Image (cartoon, rainbow, N blue to C red; front, side, top):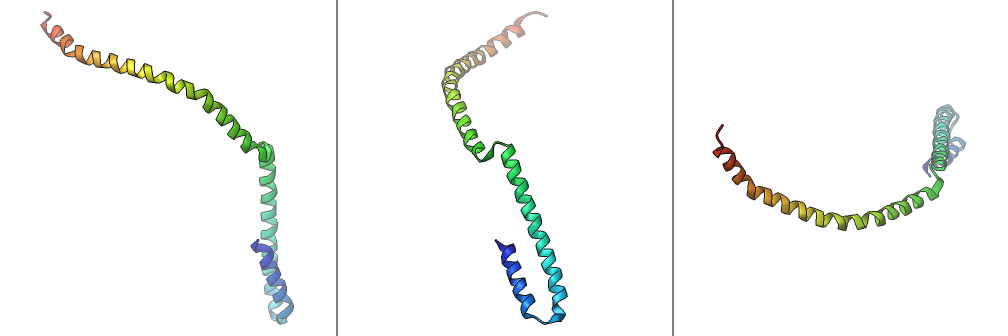
Length: 110
């Protein structure tokens, strides 16, 4: 990870540089230290969130449930095909009858 590497570099710089840069480097070191602690806290929070959502096994459970639902829905796909063909045939028949119905309406006295 980058933060520990930067921390090591700063420690090395602190030990080898002159005293006039120590204060500035100590401030930078404190900032980096705070960033590392903040990232560690965020990591712990993510771990807690993962644990509350079912742990690391939650994803495998979701995949299994998705596969079960998919196997349940697959037969329904085949049922809809004949229904759609019947509906299409009915719509075609209505399309053929529509001009005759309009002609009949026009022929009726008002």
